[in-house]
Image (cartoon, rainbow, N blue to C red; front, side, top):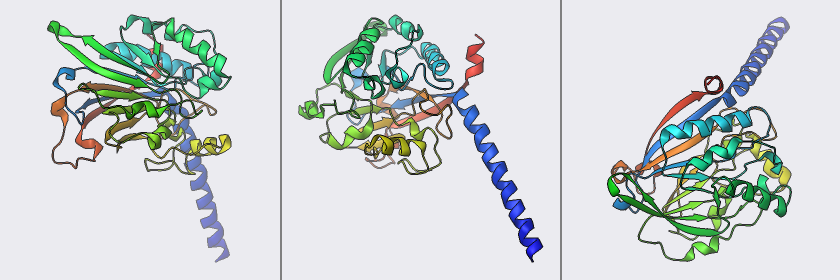
Length: 322
């Protein structure tokens, strides 16, 4: 019996080592697999004048960060060109730990007419003066940084058509700079989009304050072993929040229906603290507004009622050789 127990113990140990090795191999490979999530989105308040508008959302670049962060960001910006977005939205954390490294990474953004962004907690990591320096750096590259501000954007499109949206950009919620009370005013006749770095601000938003909200920050846990859309002790980011003594955001990954609006929380692009990801692939989000994309068979509070999505996986090595 003891011999059989020892054999079972040895087998279990071998399985454990093999599983750990496979997980490490996956974690090393995953940051080199950039997902391009494309979706047609029917907003809860369909507005025909905005139909066909193309939006791109990129967040959590962490330039200068560990592992492949900078290369991933460069690939993401390269892939953006093929989407031909009318509006480019950036979700913050441009430099890891707020350390502004010398780079031409963001220069490509100057070719787009409408580029707007918000600041993230890493942008404030070295203080408000450093955050303002990052904002000026991006503004010199045609990025309009919104800090508790709103702007009405009219996009000239093909055949003389135009599309109008209101964009509200909140300053970073994670560091306490967001002012969500500015969203208490009534919705405009055209779509209102909300952009902020961290989804924790959702708890402070008034009901029905926007049609679509886009967030980053969570990295989907970066190392994710929890299968749910919420964060838990099986996710690396859970420990980072506890270390910073910050509450965990209830919304962590993917599509949600919250406060009468459609919400997406992105896994972001770069890496921080750890040089790898696991089951939380880096991504960019490409959206096209399309009133016909809804599924009336689903409940009104099911986010998939409003979204038709597909995913394209790009290998980082392929782009590096170009």
